[in-house]
Length: 207
Image (cartoon, rainbow, N blue to C red):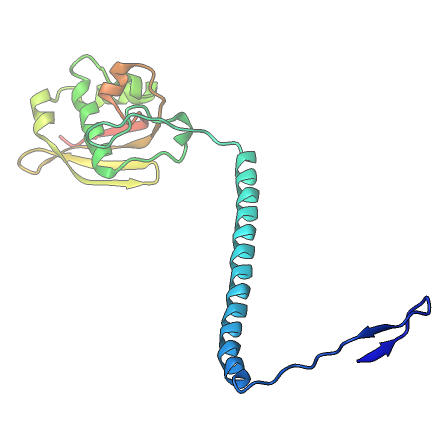
C-alpha cells in the first residue's frame, strides 16, 4: 500500500496488484494464442468481404446510371417458322444482308412471277422491272420452274448466277444488287418476309 497525493491535501491509499502466476498460465496462453490469431484473421476477412461487397454495389450503381443515360431502342419482331423476320426493322439497311440460299430462291421467284401477274414488282426498281420483263420473254413458266441456279455467288450487296435447265444447259445469266425495303402490308410479309429489294437487275439470254 502506497500513499498518493491529492489536490486538496487528502491522502488516498491505492493498491497495486501484480499478475498472479499460476501453474496453468503457460498452458492457457499456448491454447489462447492460436485461437486469437484465427479470430483476428477472421476479422480481417470479414472487413475485406464487406468492403468488396460495398465497392461492387457502388460500381454497379455507377454502371446502371451510365447505361440508363445511353438512348436505346427495344425491338420486338415476329419470326416465321423458318427463322425469317416477318418485318425486318428499317435501320438494318444499308448493311442488311441475307444468306445466299435465300437470295437465290428469291431471284428465281422473281423470274417465275413475271408471268403470273408481276406480284414481285414492288420489290424491284423500275429499271429492274423492265429488264425482268424483257429477259424472260419467250421462256415458258414450266421451264423456269424446272431450272436451277448454277454458280450463284454473292459479293457484299451484289449477286450473279447462271440459270440452267434439267440438261445442264445455261438459259440465263442474272446479276444485280440487293438491299432492304421496309414492309408495310401483310401481303408483302407473306411474299417477301425479309424485305429483299432488287436493283440494277440485268438478265442475259443464252438461248
